[in-house]
Image (cartoon, rainbow, N blue to C red):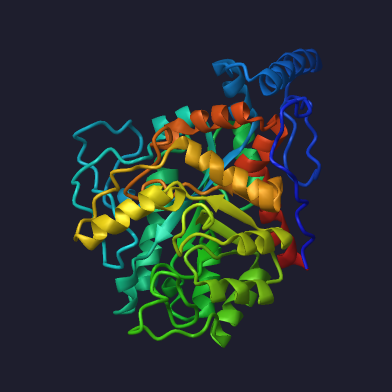
Length: 440
């Protein structure tokens, strides 16, 4: 059993100062010192820590300089981005997208149809290299998303191979000055030291394995480092939250024996088990059989927005006790009950348009606060689902807006140490735990 993450209260006024440039993480297995000479490190740390501490105590405006230093210090890891669903159709990520670009329309992945697209037409999307740089993103798990319909004619594994190829070729190989392919926590940190963005792969949709553990092994060899056990569809070995109330779908009451075999295989090879999208019973079955901490790569809190894709408080706490992390999803529906209700009403009228009441940056902070309050600072991270959702929060519209979140967290009273954990430290710790389980 993985040791539980220590619980803590949300940051308070007057939180302790953190020496940014001489910071030593509580667990030296993750994190690294920045390579500054000692005089610069001391001077910068005194000025920055004093400024942040003063902000926490007096609620003074957080300056751009402080935000920038925090962004550079942290390794911002987004554990779920659906950009490959656009690069596979030819979208060039090397230039900034502008209005009128012929980019593939947004896909609404909640509708289980092959290559489903929402009706808005060509759009700017959420991700490209210039905006990733502006946002200070250090690593991205790009989703090799496989729509449910590919499972019906047993072409899901082939589609997954295409998605893996667009990540490795169209994103990484075509842009070597910006990206480096990574498969481990250490390689993420190495990319950060080189000033590059680490690109990793998460396979979204367990049906892409075509019920074969050997296919899972092949995907691992190609660089996949987590598998989302289901998408919106129940597969042959795990129930999904997306169709759990559909009586026409054959369900399994959680994991089947094959599902348990898949979890064991993933643990043995050092691949993260992603429980986003699964039914509640599947989640509890995973925790029962897993030998390494699972990840919720793109989920939010059901206590704040009551949708099946989100996690209950009991689930979040249990995940944290195993050393797992919930990565907050930026979909408006998952962040705001008002947005969820508006979207539900729109769907009832046959519309797939984004809700008229978008979520906000404050909603994202509220979800982070909630996880910290119930499960501790070590239990939360970032899994935006950018380019995979039809609505993003005001103030966090795309990857370039992450500094707004940094500012909001600082103004809320989070320390530099806290933000380092939320942005990447917690994910690196989880990855190392999974990698260690493989070696045991």
